[in-house]
Length: 421
Image (tube, rainbow, N blue to C red):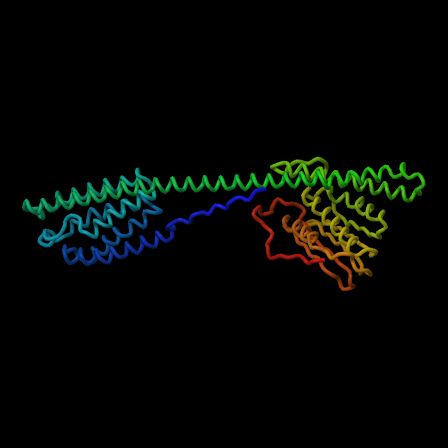
């Protein structure tokens, strides 16, 4: 399979947390400027300045989670603040919007529009501008001369221009952000589809190799073993029976191989070409090992196998099968004991072999133990394997009866390494 270039995902220029921190810092700075400016240049009482200024500067932060309450709070403070001024002082400064209040208003319109959209962002824009128009009507004593009236008009025009400009900019930036988010989702979806397609191709390749090599070899073994009685008429009945067992094992292996090929070539991995083995099939498995000349003891204690979930039964059968295969492969000539106990909560498996007297031809790779551990842990069970006090080897597994309460996000931890054998 050809290598594919990894796509690097660009990190966002600024996170939401960082934006909130910057907004808080800006609002604190505005409050620190607005209070002395409103008190000294406009004559507003200090306690009232703290209350109204706090309402103005907290509204943009509140607008992130509760925009309607923030709009009501801001517009109320913006309506009241220009009314509580001393006329002699207000005529010498921008009115009805002071510079800190104007900046806060523009910032508030931008936050509401960017976070919640243009429809909701238009509400503080319109209400704020209308409330500023009522200030000259309620305080006609401030605009007593044409020059002061012109200054107030210019102040409102500048405020309206900046607020409308912020509204338009926030609308465009929010639209761009939504488009970027949609493109990001599309890229992620495309990457997932590409990974899924690569996985299907790899599974198809593996299935092809299994079919062309392994399945063919197993078919040859099965045919040779089945026809040995007829091709070699001089062999004894005992040898012919051994060949029949080899043929039966090869046929069973081919059935398993066809099931595996069907799963590999099916995207949802739901195909089943034959019934899967379970706990009731363990005695037949033990008998097949005994026919190979291995001394195996079996004990199945209490419980009904029918009460065990199918996936748990498959795992129990495979763990017993792999544990006995390991014992035969790595400790030939030893005695194996198999014990399966079903109680009200779990299936308990114990496979133990006696101390080996010969050195195995080749050391184990650990894949068998890893597979057994994964089968147990993916079902929410437990697994352990290692030498016993007598020099033998013991494999133990505990599997839950059902998988209904299993967390679907459970994953096998990478730091769990099985013993190598």
